[in-house]
Image (tube, rainbow, N blue to C red; front, side):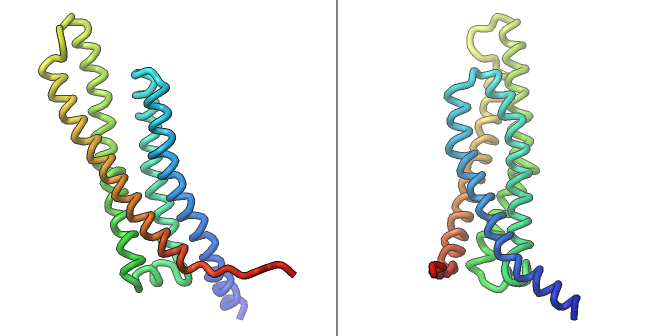
Length: 180
């Protein structure tokens, strides 16, 4: 009897944890995408900006993956079992999961490495007193642009999936007047 009551209490508490984890996921994504990145790009000199980016994006990508996982685990009323019952629920989670993993494990690290390689090559090019970018720098710039564009596009696809699910989640909320 006590175990049954404990399970019921845990299951009943999934909804608030789900709402908290998913809203944190969406809010952090909106904040990072549209505020932090823009402000840092406009206001930091190149080297501090590169240093900032190499530290912030791994944290951001890990946080996105963790919050998505927590959102799936706390999906009401029974966690992942409930999540897979409706296409309109599991599709945005799947899309978000795929793009999150791609950014976390593939394109985020690739972009970071290419960004740092560009800085190193810039130092080499500067020491060589070259006029314009070296052929190596041109290749690095092209590879960086491609990897960076993939990160951006994957992030926007994930944002679309999050907004889709948030709309669905908000449509299920029920408001009750708590006034006496």
